[in-house]
Amino acid sequence: MKTLTEDQKQAIINAVDSITESSYEYNTEHKDAADGYSHMIREGDFDYCLGEERLKNWLLENDLEIPQDKAWDILLDWVLDCCEPKPDSIYREHNGVNKPFSVSCFAVGEIETQVDFDEIRNCLDFEIDDSELFEACTELQREFDTCVHVNKDYLLCYQSTDACWNFEVPVETMKTWLEDAIEQANM
Image (tube, rainbow, N blue to C red; front, side, top):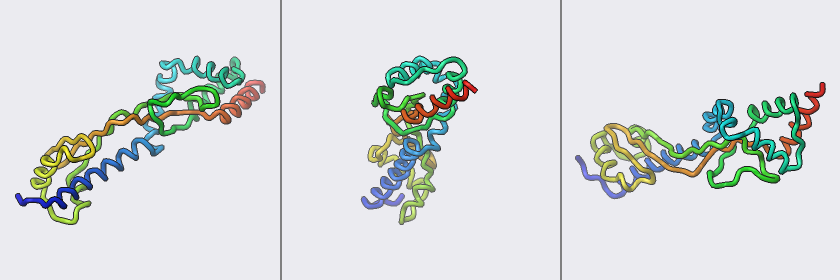
């Protein structure tokens, strides 16, 4: 096995960190990543987390009418089907006066990224084979920005995060939906 220079070692570290940084950004900031959580709202999360009770309390806190019967059902369907995911932190308080209604919130928790050796090589300006890259990554394991498990021809990189996807309805949107739900129920 050839000996790598410090610059070559740093290039490997930079390549892996860049790839995992892109994965982190995608999982915590891009709406299509949030779409992977959206089905869970109707699959029990809203009910399990006392969603209807929280919505009623939120409406009262924001001086909004709690609709009755059919209007309530219409509003509830819109809230569950049309809430928007927003990147957020698990440490932020989500509901309250003049704050959007938090329908459901899902912690991202840990992001696992598989980084193939070919991906790393594509970022390098020098030749290195699988066995050399395996040895280099094993040696550099503690230098990466993520927790790394080295395999034969790829890395598994793990990043912990306090990021979450908060599915919410803004106050003004809720006011409009509330008026429309009551109007539709009275037709």
